[in-house]
Length: 391
Ligand SMILES: *Cc1c(COP(=O)(O)O)cnc(C)c1O
Image 1 (spheres, helix red, strand yellow):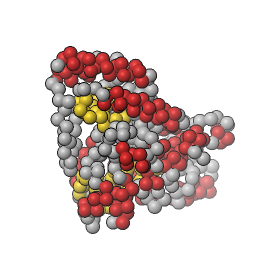
Image 2 (tube, rainbow, N blue to C red):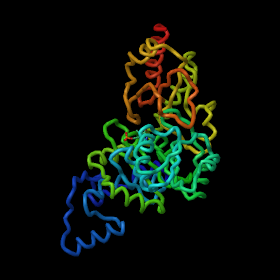
Image 3 (tube, protein in one colour):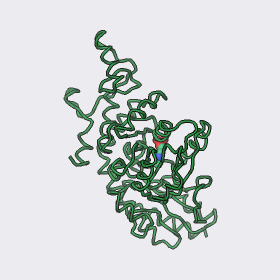
Image 4 (cartoon, rainbow, N blue to C red):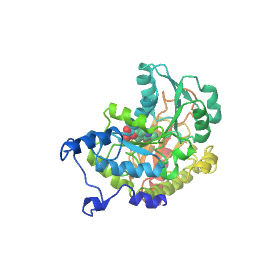
């Protein structure tokens, strides 16, 4: 079965729900057993991690629908949903480390994941080394006898460096560490993380799976070996997600392949257009042939999303304000992956410790939505005209 087919059919069972195409939205805490034996059977199945329901915290048919399609897309043993993408990033880290251990995290990691390591992991006695995202096999020199986990994110969601995930995973596994990847940018449709050596692939479902800027949710998909520990710790930490958001994500995922193609094509068109503007120092997009990450992206990825960056040549505050204030289509706001276009200034202050960001000018991040590319180019062109007039 191809991914496009899988995404439509997997995790749905209309026959179980009177023929209704989508799973029901089950609002549940208590789930009643028919009798004593049924109660005992449900408890036994829960203890042995067999399919079934026992208590709302552990999920229902609504939850399983989303978990199953995400697991199948990743080629994973199982997937589990989390109340946010951030929870899906930090619970796997907590799963595989203990006091006295060491983790390696890419310097390009999502900011809140970095702060979790610097603050909470440090407080629990876990040491973190942030490494150059372009380190590749060179990560070997940073591995300690206590290194238990290596965290990758490719491309980084602010600066878009592509990592050599198979090379990093090879070293990590040889040295006994678990590989966790934030795979939000590519989604499993464009990067099958587990096929490239990742043990736990993490997603902010908030972004492309949800796809409509109306929910917060995360998920992690794991290999058979990594699954039991991940599930145990997720339950111990009381992680679960509400059925309405899970349902919306389940609905969103059914069209993700079609949406992503459009996000990708429009993002690439905008990136190419930006590369020709004299005020642009550099475009950060691994799909552009001149990008430093292009060869690796070409080798490992089947496509990508509509999120990319650019660095402007140094300008003053009035010109930057003129550029941002006046967009008709691009919104200024956090997150991405919805149907609408976004643009934000990127502040890397405090977000780099292993590498130095070389560009003095302001960086921007663009999410290409599903609008007509011509209209988006016109909105950007007007912004550059405002910038020039304010200089
Ligand atoms: C948004 C995001 C997250 C966190 O997702 P939330 O659902 O907002 O908690 C994690 N990683 C990346 C790369 C993201 O863009």
